[in-house]
Length: 349
Image (tube, rainbow, N blue to C red; front, side, top):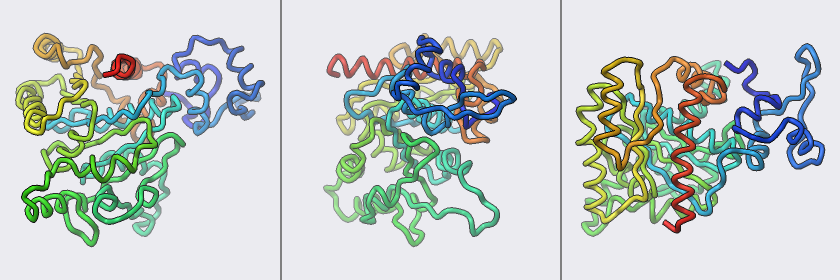
């Protein structure tokens, strides 16, 4: 693992950004004030180190991911739990943000997984009184709150999150988005339950380059809204028998919804995850590649404890260990997906 996750050396930065520039080029950029100045930290010798929160400024200049021409909205959803859905959202969001791309995560799972992953490592909790009282997207759509009142900052200036809370699905002295959509649908037969985000949220988050919707595994009005409002879908599927057996039904539920509401996505990325080094897992991975060639990514994510270690300290696997096999998986997958998106924009799709 990287020993100091909050300070980055020249070599760390060149590895993080997969950069072909030389050490001298980076140091000259610092001298010319095109990137923030490094600090001199005592690491035995005085070492030149950059703080984590200035890396997006360096990434904007030397990163391996370019900013999109227009906002990209991505729904990350699969009906199967435990397949790295939330961890993919988190890793994708952080790597985009480190490359100087302004990202908003929208948490839509009342279990709060992406919120805990993103914000809990930043909170010093000594007692129950220290627990934060977040508000969710329902407060913006139905509660009259502004984006600035709800959105939470992270340790990266280019990464924000709209947290999720248990009141997403329940009335608990706050607006429950799921319940409110359902209630409105019952009162107004003409109301469409899948376009609340499109009408009441999207225009308020237009200043972000990328919006990532993280969903629960269970089909809901919130999932319908995130699907309808998105350009792309990322749907992870583990390389295990349980995921393999339900994949066709899970994928069809997404495509059937698209047909029903006349929504077509630019791409659906089916991502193989939790790939083990055994015959069965390899067979399932091969079945994904041959059975779903229109959707499945070339990149896959292996099963390893490195991911859990990284998330326990609030960092992506790439930040946690730049040289691990898991980092290589995420580098390849993120490049593949992002390059496809940028190519679509170049072609006017």
